[in-house]
Length: 332
Image (tube, rainbow, N blue to C red; front, side, top):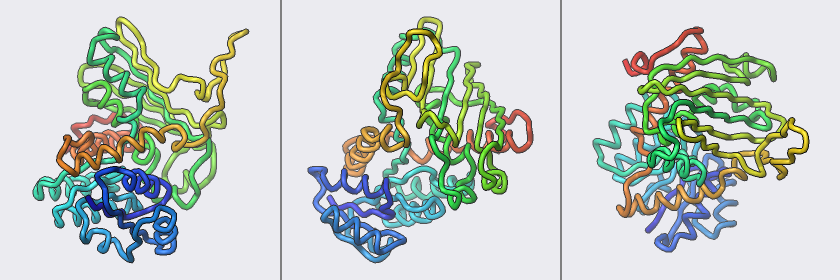
């Protein structure tokens, strides 16, 4: 099997290394908007560097897209036209219309797709999902999700990121759907600007909060930050009538107990996403090789990504207009 890569920044290069080591893969071809970076990554991994994204689509059996967000939709549609199975980092596109266009293209072409929501491969989230399915927690009544970065992204990234709900919390929206098996019905979101001016200037916030109601009445709350000095903090609480599971509560949790004599957690908090989720990233891209070979169904399709994007759009609209927004309003 031969796999082409478009975009070999940190995640793309890491994906390329995992795919290169897969026993079914015989060749890897990498391209990047920065040809020097493509050449450097190719030399480090012992794979082939090609000049353009089109070259990465030539003489391959599947494509991995980890390029800039603005290029995702065009590249996925090109992969569909070429009849190639395609893995793409989130988001599929920067807006609903673009995501719908990609969905139409891949469905018409009949190609396998997988979107990079790596939390679906994290052991804690998998355990929480299994507990919900097995009834271990009883009837799920409440959830709480946190995604907080230790440091903000580079200022140049913020204006084109799409905002914290589309860029960051879309992971929370996806995993909320995946763990519970329910859809979000309504969203009320808010935010604050307490940090760099670039966030406000870009129409974004650096502190976020939201209340979501699922289609069965279950309540979910959400918090986020670009300035969580304690460390990179990603957690999910799932509370039911018979028990509560917490994902991300281990020795590395970015928490300090205020209770006398309590020393948990005592480990070093993660500072960024790769350290926290590396096993999940590796598992998801290995799964894509199996998807491309027709050996398993996609664990996260473009249709899944669209549902999560609807929630992100609803949250963004809610924050901008200061009102509750239904997902049906966004669909329409």
